[in-house]
View 1 (cartoon, protein in one colour):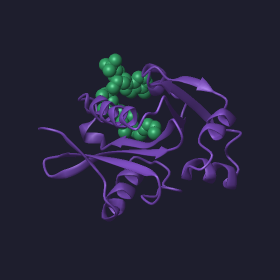
View 2 (cartoon, helix red, strand yellow):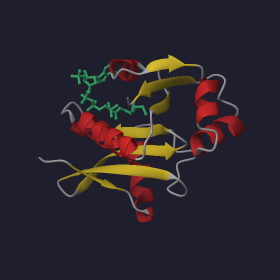
View 3 (cartoon, rainbow, N blue to C red):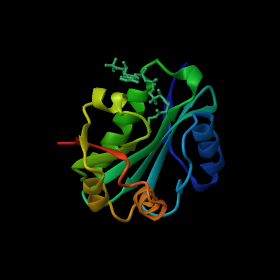
View 4 (spheres, helix red, strand yellow):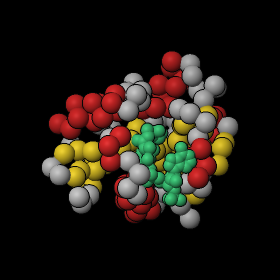
Length: 150
Ligand SMILES: CC(C)(COP(=O)(O)OP(=O)(O)OC[C@H]1O[C@@H](n2cnc3c(N)ncnc32)[C@H](O)[C@@H]1OP(=O)(O)O)[C@@H](O)C(=O)NCCC(=O)NCCS
């Protein structure tokens, strides 16, 4: 089975939400409107993975990253991450931030380091997920991570 990666279109929102729900992930504030890029991974004619990027100035927020359970463990997560990082370098970003829903072991393994959530919020104040965190009130209790693209 081969993997291909493409940018999502507005009409892909339902399939993105279904994938995230299938992985037990939050869908609050997921939007394809504004300065965001969602990447879709496809195999066998089906969408089997998603990775969202919400852009700021010199930095972007990575979110909503999942592969369908039956295609995990094949190295495809690295292909999706590498595609995202190439795109972020092209736009001139230096830093990638994200919130982890769990303890973040996957992200630590990827080279990310924990940062105070308020650093993330200050770096990317206009992004949908940060705005939601502030409005709903979970920012202070969140776990935030940073990785340098340099
Ligand atoms: C996160 C996710 C996309 C990774 O895809 P995957 O196919 O399971 O990942 P892979 O098996 O290709 O593993 C990639 C690397 O991460 C490591 N890894 C995988 N899960 C890990 C974990 N829980 N903790 C630490 N390292 C982990 C693997 O050992 C591998 O390391 P290597 O490149 O040094 O060999 C997938 O597990 C998933 O959809 N999980 C549910 C949603 C989620 O947690 N998303 C992330 C938060 S937004």
